[in-house]
Length: 142
Image (cartoon, rainbow, N blue to C red; front, side, top):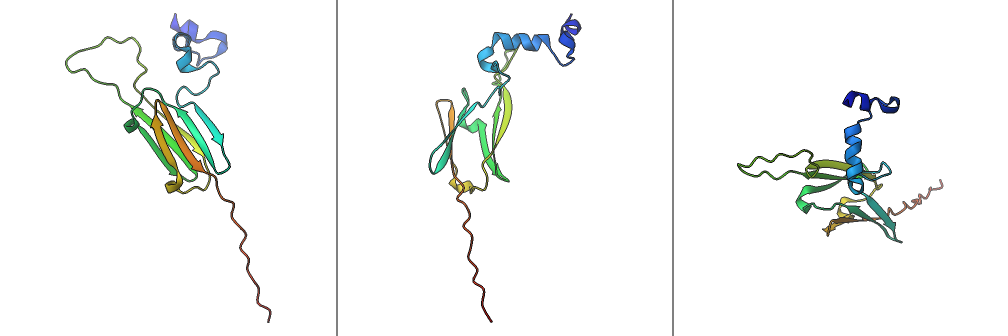
């Protein structure tokens, strides 16, 4: 039966059972094919950008942030908790996962970026790039 359902509408990568889970948990998966995790709002002020990244149910030790080649990389590694000596009979598990997103921030110094995690929201403040001023070079006349 699964093979028949996976060939629906001529798409070989369609998985009926995976789609059924999306229908049961629409708030978690999203309806518009958006990111499953790390939904992000970005605000601009005169001097900086403020990113608010939705990360519910995490501990800040599970979040990693780094800056490389102008990209701010945010990674999450959430491990499932093991119950010693007790076997659980799960049908479906989603609370153990890892994911990563990258955001282009330009030429910013790592020391200037500030991050705070509170109530399931990671707030990252990134200063705007200051435009490079053209340097004057005087030419000596002989």
